[in-house]
Image (cartoon, rainbow, N blue to C red; front, top):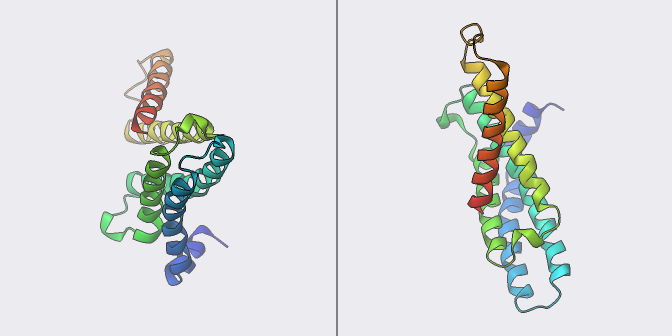
Length: 166
């Protein structure tokens, strides 16, 4: 099965995916109500970790896919599939906001790895887009160390922006 066939199948049967991405913010809200005032922070942090991974993995995939389609494939926004391209991102943002209102992300096991993974993906897509847009022949007089420093500064800026976002 190819990715195209999977997307075509989901387009023909969207309700399981819609239900999944509507269920995750609802579960985050319910867990927030149940965990309110509980002293067992460790247990609830693991419950939130499951929710974070369940929503962030498809959400990060959707962000990456959207970036690829819009920057490299030049897909029109009018041809975007709302259920597969936007619903995971909206669900991820809403779920993370609900979780952040109840527990700091620093208490959720593995959250730093997800944000690091997102930073790496964003930096790699940024570098790929930059290389796609420039003609390396025109930039040969720039020392490689300057390009490397620019890449590292981009990574730091993306990481800082991500930490301030949530």
